[in-house]
Length: 170
Image (cartoon, rainbow, N blue to C red; front, side, top):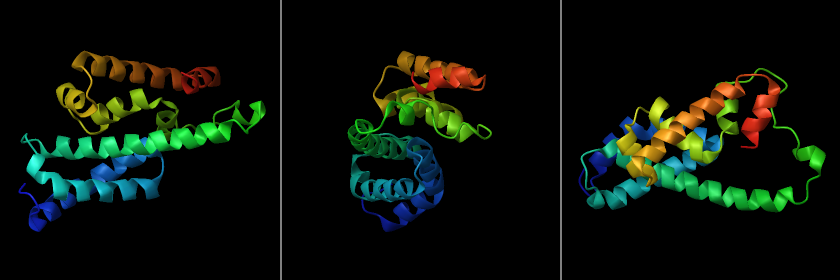
């Protein structure tokens, strides 16, 4: 992909826009924010294409999207900490959405970010451990451990409610 080539950007967007948006939505659990971050991702792709050093365009685009999503999560966590201080113990005791059937997205939402991101990249988007390692700037062995632990937590979460509480507070 050449730097600032509108045709190349259109091709990249057509190919990766929906997978990136779906991935960011699964990370943030907010479709509107995911669409904004997807748009911001492709703006960065357009202006930073000259910095692409590998032949793996998909991994590079997902790295940009991951970094933007993580920045958004950090902002949210700061806001949430301020709001949690005002909530009572009863309001924060149980994870939301456990009255009805537990869906995959609900289970994924219960996973801490450090486990959810590598699992999504590995199992949903089929990146190699090496690619995920580069995207998250973590050793490959750590990524393998995080994916394994995420799967273990998801299996526990599919069990009775008490396991979900452990998963939620892990």
